[in-house]
Image (cartoon, rainbow, N blue to C red; front, top):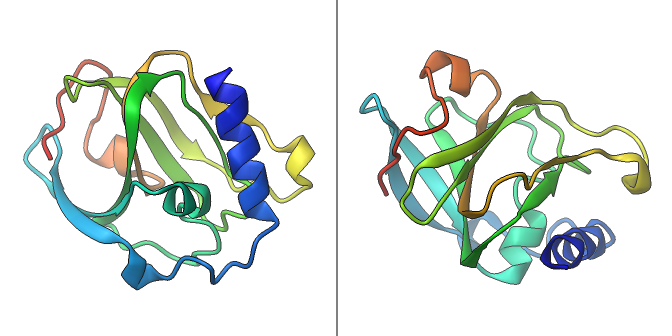
Length: 148
């Protein structure tokens, strides 16, 4: 049920004004990857921030990302509707261990109803989105711990 609610929440965001949530509305947090690399992540914790995520962005620097914070561990599915750049999506549990990865996730260039969903196979409390290729570059894999 939470997955359906989350997808429904994302669907409603697609119909909104792309400028509803502005970049300065996001706080930031440093995320340390298992190999010690530092990522400066925008934090998405409100419903509006989660709904928008990285939609409409035309680029994302190699040391940047977005960290989604949820109130409870759950099966979380993401999609790439109105996301213009490919991303690596990393699901993280309450112990901050990587539980699932979708590497090189392509933008969805079709209607929302035809966009595939990613993740949701393992309970997660956090999701980290990074520029595509980051998983390979930093040798990320399930079971590793991320610090933030």
